[in-house]
Image (cartoon, rainbow, N blue to C red):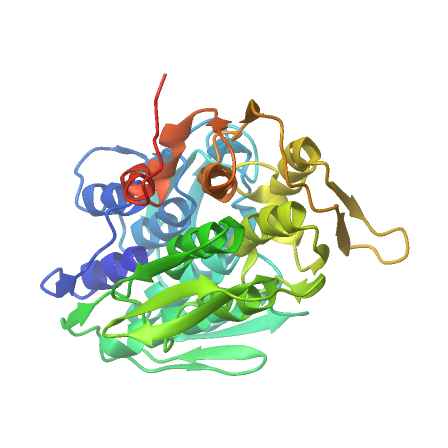
Length: 387
């Protein structure tokens, strides 16, 4: 939400008041790069920053080289580049076709008022096109081919655009956006439900728990708010208190079947909780995990083995992943997990500290989305040491 707000504000002239912006590294990068005069923009490992800046720099006529980490150079961007080229953009690949780094050469004028894009690609491509669409002379009709994944992120983008006074309609098979200037405004960014999910995991795994989450509301634009419903099944009750929520223990089910199509960032956290509690998990909608900061499915398979759990694709149904484990009251006292330089791997396995000592490699990766994570872990009374 913060990165979307920064892009839209820039398109509105940069005069808006953006309150409660995330302190995540991805957002700090976006704030710095969007006003940078440098010819090269290094997005590091920030996916939204890469995709959103590509569309922003192209449509606003900025000639920029946009690059990132070695992993970012392995994350595809061809679908977005093809769409922008169809609109009238000039974009050059500097290394491998279809992947960063790229160079934008400006925008020669809108060639078409209508685009078709696969609905099952990263919603970041779709959001990037949506946000620049009001600045196009003919607006944009964005049609979806096939099934649409991560729809809550698309609807989040539309909702934020409307707060800046533009017309954006998200229909079942298309998005309709009129040509209309963004108007500066004042908005307060919601607290992050993706970050909140890790405290649900702490509550689920601890023998006893009462955790208060300030500034959280059940009414949210974020798809990851669904963690409330998932964790209700995994043994965590959520109750409103003032402007926040209190998490506490409850009984859990023995099996969880869930489609993560619209909330893929929750899959790792849920998998760890299921593995530890001996809950059989039937997971679908994980296709996008292959192209995240790491191949998250492969990473989960490797690390869940250390908890005595198997995470295997069903032989009967491709795209369905089955997690099998048995409750283990005692773990290896020297549990160590590789984070694969993925912030969500680090934070998904951190709640094991509610039960045993845990070693996590490269703990600093959390700065990508939750820079104060380890400080908040300490606030639970958990001792952390960095070597």
